[in-house]
Length: 70
Image (cartoon, rainbow, N blue to C red; front, side, top):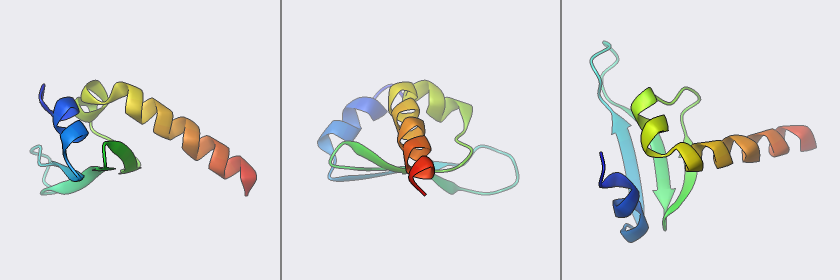
């Protein structure tokens, strides 16, 4: 978990999956391209929020701006 923020800086494409035991199996919760967050799930798990707090808050701001333009 601690290495994920550094790994995203070096990966061309980073897909982050959640496989916590909740009966849903694994699911894609975030995608980074060239270090930039491009997609997240509507309800990110707490561990993802802890690891990528700043990126997720920036993504939320971006979604709000996009929704206002519609």
